[in-house]
Amino acid sequence: MEKGHQRVKISPALLLKTHKVIGNKPVSTKRKFSTRLAAGLLIAIVIDTALQLVWKSAVLSLPHDGSLWLNVQAILQNPRFIFVLFLMGCQFFNWLMVLGDADLSYAQPVTSLSYVSVFLLSALYLNEAADVFQIAGIIFVLAGVWFISQTEHLTRAQESKV
Amino acid sequence: MSQTSIGVVLVVICTLLEGVGQVFLKKSVLGAVRWYLWISFGVVILAVESLIYTNALLFLGVGAAYAISSLSLISITLMSQFLLREKVTRMRWVGVGLIFIGVGLVVART
Image (tube, rainbow over all chains, first blue to last red; front, side, top):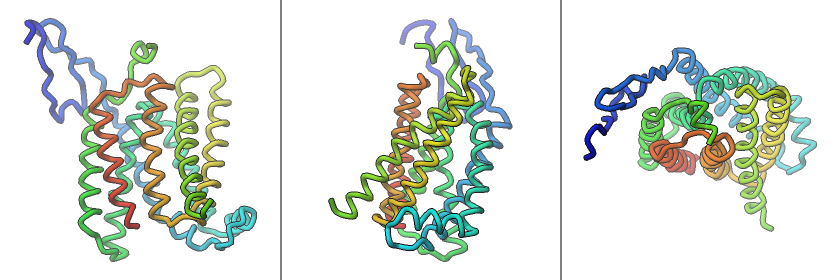
């Protein structure tokens, strides 16, 4: 290995800050994962979970004749869709705050954790049977989010101007 | 064109619209001069996407639609990398790939 060049060991600490190695001294670049971002991502996942569950039940109540106009009418009349719109509004403003603190390519995959929560809620409360494929899928999602969490959550301005 | 293929095409269009809409929203918080235009167009695109998606569910099973719509993870990451110039490292791609496979496995049985 080249002298003066040190490999940075990947550790959970990287979730909170990153290290840049200059010469022999690791220098913390203090790209802090803020509480606001953590809360924003958590809220996004919770709302997304609620949206998926309500959306699923609302869509199943649509008339199955394939007409767009009838669907729009059904949407406007169904209280579940109004609730979906309300949740979407909350999701929207929260999402803009999250995007202000993190890369889109960081935040979006992390919200896939809602698939895990929907799966767990369905298994626990709706008594939906879980098969081996689904459990494997959940493990894949969790592993994927772990990998994402190891990357820096925000691209620096000078890096993005390539 | 069969009912299923119409559904598949509609959901694939949705995944692309999702990517474009999200890029517009991200643009609006990046300090763009006309941020309100980015937000407005982003919202319009995402609203159109919801309508198309709702309609696609009439042609396609919910499980299949969910599975195909997980492609939006890939489209969003690609657009972030090339349109927003975000630093998408190999590790982030590995994460996205694992999540994509995972979501596919979870929802395909819905």
